[in-house]
Length: 170
Image (cartoon, rainbow, N blue to C red; front, side, top):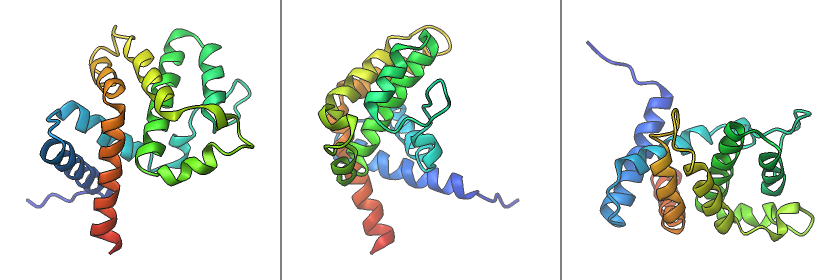
């Protein structure tokens, strides 16, 4: 019987392979949970509606970390945890995969001008990791690890992007 693999499964396999090679073989970080989380992050952030999924009470899309932080402070604990997790993902994605976009994201005319994405990403992942009760008990340790290894994760994602560009963009 022939199994047909969907496009999303192919992308997942590609991202997982690139991440595993980068983190395990090249960086010496052998953590399948970390690789799985980062693979899922790349898959989720293929869609712009996921990158900008945090909304205010009026339903407006929040595109700046400063606005997301304000929304997190006004939220109940579970949504607060999700917003902080998203801020961690958002800052890691842009810092790691598309660091050239930071010039625009942190330009003088934006609220994020004074926000350090590295520090805020580490902080937000840490906050999200403190929610250790069900249903977050399995994800909390990997979020704590990403908080601790934010800089290495950024470098790893930069390397993964370089590899996929070499492989597919010539």
